[in-house]
Image (tube, rainbow, N blue to C red; front, side):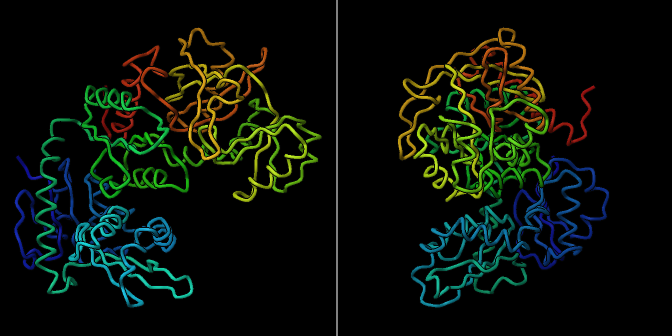
Length: 494
């Protein structure tokens, strides 16, 4: 059986060790030898001296992606290493870990060498693993500076480390990390050979209100295996492994300023099939965008105003009271308030504007329940009625600290029993976003149907949204993801 793990280097004669289960290849040979062009299910560990634009190392990763191989680093990771904005974002995201790891240092500068996610000093292992996950390149060097003004450490830069640049006293450790790393991936390679493609399902086991409960996740896993995926639940720390998979399915609540968006963006850049796409996350998580989009396409929404000042008079004149105020990126009924009294309106608008330059104000439309129509691949998938929580105006009732106090009842109906206007309006709204998986929330008052919002990554809980379709709901979604993978791989089913 041909080896499926290639180590690509500039000069094999100076590569110091032989790693079982791998094939050592000269970079120029990998780029030009036809024998490597048609191989499938290949992992490429690119250990060239440089990943500079149009260098050998750059072209190894670029052509690996074009051939359907899985390079480490991928081209998107190479670009991220050059991006000052990405480095700044990661420094902010890992701020607590950076301060904790570097606090004992007594200098103003620190250089961290990272060998496949590890450092010679164990106290830096967690920081090394996080940086390797976010910038998945085999060997890295991160530069930190201490700001006396801010009294904290900041990551100033991170760059690939060529094997020739590894300090002599680090070489034995780096080679040992390589041995352990390659020994660790061999069971996964053997497992995947029995399935057609590999599916990553991103979850957060600590999330209090996840989009799928554990029973639903088990059903997704079962459905994925039935149709030919080797599925695996992954978490935030698996960012650096995305190139190992063929598809990514997000089952963690998404937001733009969040690792879920970075997962979707990196997966799309690596050529994976992604549900939902970064474009869907961008569009659905911002209610200002949705309000403008739906209004432009003449899809009915509650009377809506976009506010940028804490002036209540236009709201009182146009919408009246009670009215609804929304954060642009709120989710799960949070960041949404109902205002019943004029004296509270200015205060609530100001409170929301403290966190966002714009706020949504909408006319309050009281109904006993909201419709939720699930849409996938531009087709209706399921229909639910979510009833308001007891003595509350929303489906979910939260405490001031954000914890869930109560939720309303629900029922799931066959699509044939749902008013045609509800389904058709939901479909029109979702199709403006894309062909992914969406949950469209609507209110019906008489014959009039209003779209409240379009959600990417909607709830699919066992016992709720699957009450009509049962296991077939999970199969349909997995089949849709499989079709996307086949299209990307150029596979024709006919």
